[in-house]
Length: 442
View 1 (cartoon, rainbow, N blue to C red):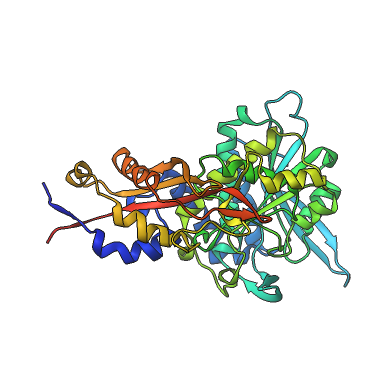
View 2 (cartoon, rainbow, N blue to C red):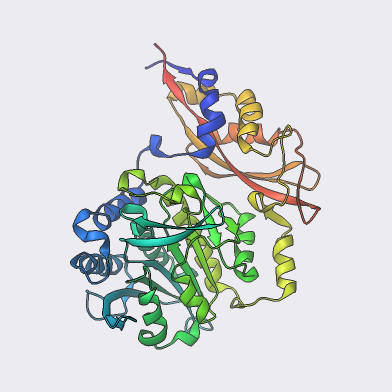
């Protein structure tokens, strides 16, 4: 048997910085979902597709691919042609913009709601300039490659597969769409909502997937401050989730959600591209963090399931609903939404908690060392109004032995200084990865 030594002391600097920022499951090998995401991105981001720009052969091939893959997941295509719904829109200069949409359908299971819809969509095209808000200032950049939205399209396909498999959990029916000519006119989504789809009045909510390939830089949800849509994120924050988005008020970038807002349809945009990391001249598949994408798929899937069965969200929710969101449906607020974040030993940086408590008192299970077991444990916990650490649970674990030790150390945590919202102490939900790593003894 190979001998192993625990490399805790040598790895402490790594744990304190990179581990919290960029957790990965790559040590455990690619999951089936990660392999599928990589395969879809590889095709959709290929140079042969010319950025999937409106009217190009690349867009046509991308539309065919999305139609075929949506059918393979078990969703029913809305359009007879595998090339999607071809449309033309006249521009102000007199030219006609030609593009196409791809869409599929998954029926809901609730007899009262199945004739209502949730639309889940991603933009089909890529190569074009975009104006983003960076540090509050408008900046125009040109995007190419994988994260200009091959990531969103690949995740749309994975969501389709999961929703089809578990459609008994759906209340409302779900429409999955890839909109052409999104940049810069949002033409595909406009055409879908104003010309193509005959039952727009029964679309009660929408979910946008926008550049979701770099999760270690942050995972964000933008709802235009819609309290009903935000309340779902608040509700999920109190449950076991592989990742939690930060709900943000500034619009990350102009996109198709504006067409849904124009029709007064509540919409949430999920993105990992909120801040300067988003501002990349040229993206390639190699920059994508597929383990993070897998977590985001799981979270967004749970969000859609919750959204599909709830009362229809209001486009302009009442002040009472906004107050309920601030308080949290169960009095629990996501850590990053606290006005004043909980602090440990005077720091609001979770890496300090890992460095100064978790990895100081963590004991690598002897049996795990003997068997060469290593990996990560994603732990959810709540810091209550008194600063006590409560509701400690494992959201994901690579092995029960590692899980038991990770939970033991976090449950034993000293009190924190509690977080606050509007000056009031609140329960704050946190999620942290605890890493166990072995190295061969020389």
